[in-house]
Image (cartoon, rainbow, N blue to C red; front, top):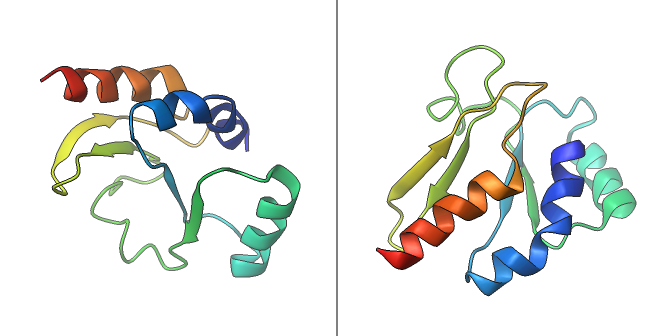
Length: 105
């Protein structure tokens, strides 16, 4: 949940870069009900979604216990990856740095 809280604190910075944040959960034991609970508790300004069986996300974080973060441009092209683990997730400033680089290209 720490990453959700941090991303929320940087919501204005993401918005200023015309970026949308999408958080895909794979490890939520309570499923969709758990996501609803998280949404009520944290009120994130971004979309939360769930890949229960990791079918869609497996190709993106294929190693066990990896939680990588992707910066994808408006054409659907992956422009940057920030590696992450269960305990060490991407920080907002890392993602914002990649977004700023894309904007300046």
